[in-house]
Length: 99
Image (cartoon, rainbow, N blue to C red; front, side, top):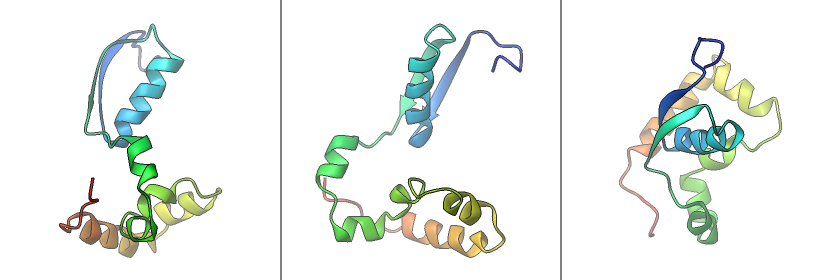
């Protein structure tokens, strides 16, 4: 934001963007004037209940913790088009976690 000429700003984060915004507020407390964070799953509750079924249905939650360059390759390659299509089908299913 500084590169764009904003020394202070307001920000909104949704889901993982909310987590990024939390970290940004910790790293740059004087830059973020106001923040709105929406729809973040409670991490400790989520991982306390993680089992094989959950990890299989929501595998993308664990995708970006893989060592580089796996996430980058999968996210940016031509082959990722079918991968992203699979995510859309899974994410729009009605199989939500029990909590």
